[in-house]
Length: 211
Image (cartoon, rainbow, N blue to C red; front, side, top):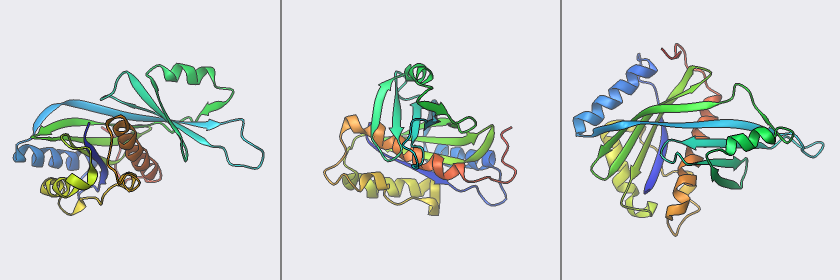
């Protein structure tokens, strides 16, 4: 995995979530990007039950990514994080006396994968309780693991189909002046998805029910 940026794309004025996604697909295909299947990222939220009296319950996020089907990521609010086997969910059920699933808080992002030269692009619809909350775009520049060496190139590429919606350098890279290392890539990517999911949890788009 290379340097990856995950960002939210605003819904086009006068368009629905699905219509905006279709516009992004069309722009990518006009650039010459080739569709390569689909992807899914999801996140379950758990509350720690055995917290110290008077302190707020710490949250645990368990996330799955179709790109890494044999593993999942468990992220504690404020750190640390754990990369575990895919059946970690079964363990969470057994730990229900310590962690309670926050019902109705599952967030899912599904969409299409595109390949354009050295770039891998994923355009997804973020849903919660069957209601669309927003649009995500993930762009990965596969040959490089140092954000500072390729960010300008990534930004220029994203401008070609996102226009003024191009994001700034993700905050997750700020603490990595020495660059990204392969084992951490999945964590950095999923951390960005978690930030996006938490932001979109608080929003409700008008007329955004998934059809």
